[in-house]
Length: 275
Image (cartoon, rainbow, N blue to C red):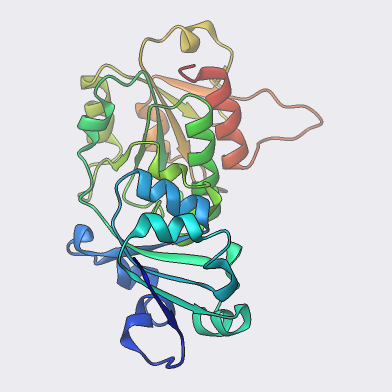
């Protein structure tokens, strides 16, 4: 049974993970599998537990211990549960708690991208998407709209960052993901070769004169398709677009030239997903 601990000492080292360590420090760059991350809200925490992530401790509003977090506490077993009022917790963490519950969890070793693509028909490839909100929203769409896996280039934000995981509604724990091209210079050229070796056609979402419409029969008819999306504003690099088999656009009206990358991903996954 978990131990409920009322917060009285703000300097307690056990609270460092919530109050004094940045997400980058928690990541443990040299050995990510040795690091931790923070999951926020009961639904997100439960999905992480379902995926097999190990909880270390919980931090929550006192009133949630017998309320919406009761199932989380039961599932987490014998770990410390730190509690206080919302005002105290907000001062401690430096941000308002969504749903009033945080869980520190251990990271796991990341799988090889080839492993999660084995048997996949539709994957999303995200190039240098740095905004955690966009990243989380893309994962939610990927889970809902038929993506079998998500690959990330080294310049992407971390899917396990608190905001990414929360915006995704915990789907970052449901959709298999891994990085492609970890070493400098491997993406895009070598990464594209790897995708082709696995049998994927590649579709760059970009506005170009030679773009094909997203409803092009060749895309829908592809046995295995990788949908490649770039960062907000700059979009995909020229080298990535040149290496892709197709450059794809979403038809627009009212003189709008493009959508936010998260919105564009939802349209692309809906049209081209494995459903």
